[in-house]
Image (cartoon, rainbow over all chains, first blue to last red; front, top):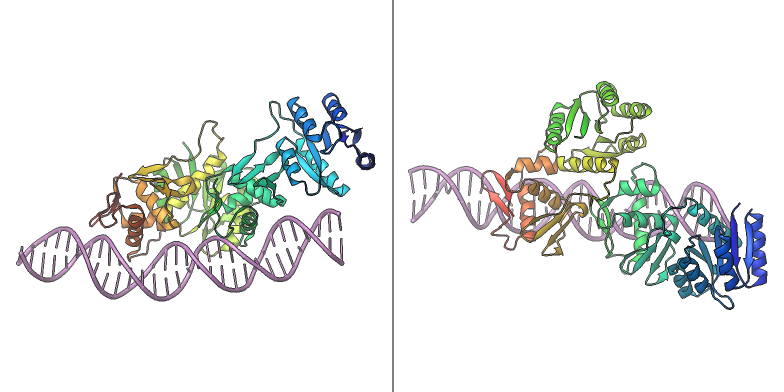
Length: 230
Length: 230
DNA sequence: GACGGTCTGACGGTTTGCTGACAATCTCCG
DNA sequence: CGGAGATTGTCAGCAAACCGTCAGACCGTC
């Protein structure tokens, strides 16, 4: 059974989380301040941590940093207040794996918890917690949390968009054909008479390029495919 | 040495393919109908198959399906007639790995063959993937990104221009006739008698030569063709 | 039932390629 | 040296190819 540690000082919220998580079949432990949270995380080694950033005493950032410095690599999902974009970014940089903005729907949180646990399933022997972030232009791609920052601000990408971006990133500088992209991102081999790939590329440009009509990073290679440049 | 099976009923085309593939260092076998092709593929286990879809008797689709049902997983590149969009899709659904539309330039086919074999091969740890850049004068040609730099600055080339440049580069120092260029870049059915090649050469000179009227690298060999010098 | 994500096909703009006429250049030979 | 013929260079206009864009359909989830 998966064990989850909730570090949250608000009793109502903590109670609600415990309830919902236990209904889903998780074993839940709650710590109501940062110091206790860090201790439980280090000693108990839960499978996942839900960490509020706003905590009395030792705040969430310090907990997170101390945890990673102690070599604990379990996924961490941080809770941030609406509008505190900077906190999100700082948390992700410190090694958080995902974030949820308060107020949040319980289902959204459960979905993210499930996703994180599923992804963390295969433990890497010598791994240090996933591949390092990739950068191009003012864009930073953090595979571990499927997060994209642009100029330090999180950019919401749909799953397909993110996968497509990663596929281009994996062969940065080289031409990637539409067929290759279909293979790697879509997973089946059906060349398209339609504009599926192009549509998603356009969306990526809209979200990540300064001037989508004159892209500087996500480039078209006529008659061949696309190419991502720094 | 990589072994390639060509299943093609048109003798001229089969001959041309064999020639070019052998020049590239592949060991080539040819089958001129579907039944023979299937037998050779199953028994000989080539590293790659080039399969025409239009074949007398057992057509390419049936060959492909039978091959996959027999558990053979080597990459298959299918040849389809122009405009047969549905065939392409059907072929890919049946498990083809790539397609080339007739008429095709030999260089395009060679590039795709190479790509398929590279993908099927175990990735070399220290390998840097792909052929190294070629240089002449202050020009650098990078096949992987279909990019050309001149004095370090990117020069925008159209697809035909790039392919033409690569064709000249492949035989740097030697004379390449117009007919050769038509075969390699334009396709096996070279029916162009006009000034097409010259026009594109002129454009290359305009973009890559310091003085296009007195070219130092892309040279004319009167009564023969063109020659590229460092 | 609203909503977001995804896919598709039609449409239009732009680029690219091809062509053929003409100009320029070269070669050969008178 | 000069000129004819052969060969190559140049150009602009047309047609096709190619890609970006969009609205709408579909589908699963909330």
